[in-house]
Image (cartoon, rainbow, N blue to C red; front, side):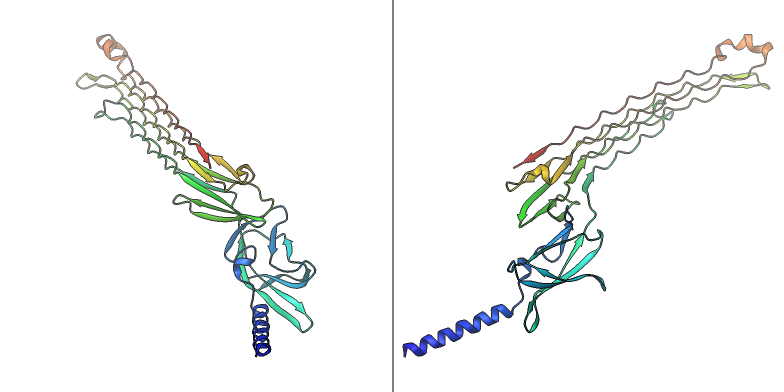
Length: 306
């Protein structure tokens, strides 16, 4: 009786082993995982899968309907220099005496050209030109908007490092290949709006028929430039990795807005020479306004690593 049970258990174990060998490797066991956006490194893109170092495999890589590579590989790791900006499909089969057995079903990834994730605050609107209603002075520029807070999470994934950036509208995911250059995370403040130009004074006039005269108007002062927005703060969840190997940062405050231009005074009226002594008060052009004050730059954001 015991021998019969032993033989049944042995047969069941053998059947289970055959089923496991026949099943493809799960997608999460291969690198890069399907759907990845890969930043290539010094070796290009590294493809790896569970397997023996001396086993022979057939690797196939395509983009669209074009075959990029189809070759025998000894071992479970290979690297390729692939054209960035394209999507690729790949699969792996084990070479056996009976032919080929697919062990990695078709996976897909994209080699991206991204070198940075850049967020910038919206720039402030420029001030309006001066008018009589504004006492000739140009309007002040609006302040720039602040940069957005971002969170970057680095996670080891075999030879790769996964990078997830959150903070709308910058939600991005990357897979950094070995030797990939650091990505730049940028969250800078928006520039302040320029101050509006001062009012341009109306020219003086002399009316020959009535001998009436109008005095030239002075020019208005330029408006103040808007303040630059503050740079956004960036928080990095490093998971023990050397952040400088994978990320660079730019959290500058926005530039202050340009000062509004001074308004020019009106020109003196054209009065006949023989009458000018009667209108001495009107012979001078209107005074020019003063230029506005430039806006202050925004404050720089900070980077927090934990």
